[in-house]
Amino acid sequence: MKQKYLFILLIFCLLIATPASAQDSARVPERTEIPIDGLSIYPNPVTGGKVYISTTKNQDKVIEIYNVLGKPVHKARMRGRELDVSLLTPGIYILKIQEGKSKATRKLVVK
Image (cartoon, rainbow, N blue to C red; front, side):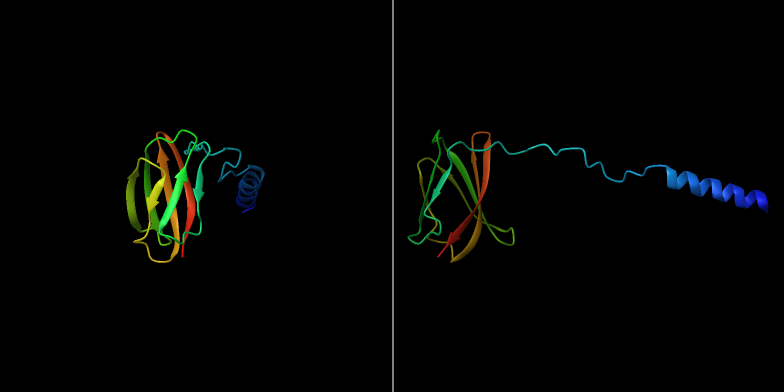
């Protein structure tokens, strides 16, 4: 009986003394987005049905607009700076912009 208690005590002490690492907090997550240089979105909030998106490079852009529930509501390829959002109902949207390999996510308010 004494041996069982000593064995249990030994295992208990080993469990307490052994550092447990369920998460590795020293690891830094990799950045998946390359920021778009000089990104400017105006006017925000949108009142006239058009929003202007400009960047330093002004290359072709792929625009995706999602509602706050994450459902896609509009997707477009932009060559200039002007994006027509007149079909969107007033509310808050998530705007995802991709220009080449660069990506950005912004909030868009439509009034």
